[in-house]
Image 1 (tube, rainbow, N blue to C red):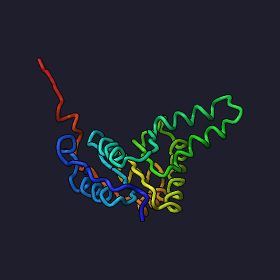
Image 2: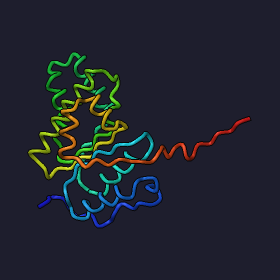
Image 3: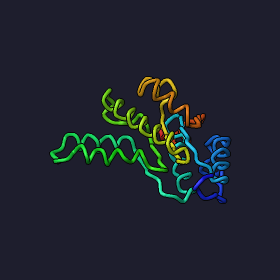
Image 4: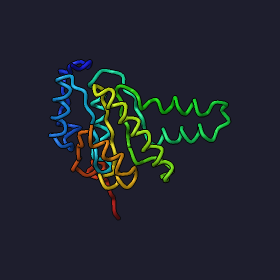
Length: 189
């Protein structure tokens, strides 16, 4: 039995979402309407609506979510470890405890800057932390957005992390191209 409220106002697969695969919206609406927990991995090109659909889903649930931008989160981590804080490890640990939230959205996985082996190891560890949390609390909810496809996720975070994501996450592949390019206004002369 889920602790989440049933959402009666579904996400509409028109207007802003006309570019998003309606099967993805249908699946999310089914889980929201039943009050089910869920874990989605949104994969697709830049600008295809992953973050838009993720944040809309978060708003529809009407519960508190921990929102993490990978680039901002990693910059905060670097700030802690290079700082003069007396207890910088404790400050960094509190920052990383976000990955133990009941409801969590990780936006732009793979966009940590600088993109180094250290940043990939760091986020790989945080993804494993989230995996362990989900195993203990399967009634939780998670949305991860990324421009990396399966091979890119394996290359960046390792096959172990990708395998663990596959165990609990519904992988939603966005087939569309950037909606920003559709509205491109080019004047030649």
